[in-house]
Amino acid sequence: MRWHCPGATQVQLEDAPAYATGVPEEMHYHQKRGAFRASVRRTADIAIELAHPERQRRFTAYLMDLSATGCKVRLEGDLSRSMTAGELYTPAILTLPDAGRVEVAAEVRHVHFREDANETHVGLMFKQPSALAQRSISIASSTICNARPADWRRKTCSKALLHNHVRPAEDDHPGR
Image 1 (cartoon, rainbow, N blue to C red):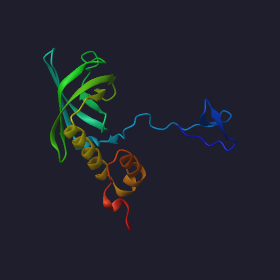
Image 2: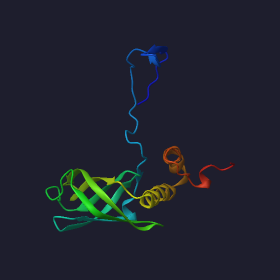
Image 3: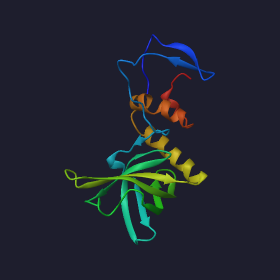
Image 4: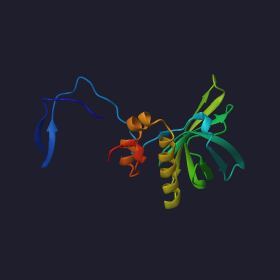
């Protein structure tokens, strides 16, 4: 979170520097996760195949967004009773642009059926991805951002990607 509070004063709190201030009139929520989520266009159709090791179930879902720590996917129909939070799908195989097939384990975090679209939206968290999988996912996030118009990338991707140690495309910063 961030806020503007001109009356803040620096103090010592338990022998550590801190700031004291009143409650701000307005606060702005900032993304709570440490990894930037790149929104995926519906027309991109980037697939993830989910396999449940014990229940002999397989689903093919399509990415709605992607980050270093997880993704949000859509599946056709009402699968809200078939998938529950905490379930682990392994292998989960992402088919990423410029990276091919990347295998990870994915844990279901939340499931929501959207009746108006006849789709189930599922939040997935990657569980201990390999270094190669992490790198492929980071590159794919960058690729997804760089596929957007330059003005959108400048506003949305540049700072977040630099935070995640991925450099944006060179055309995002002309003159450097």
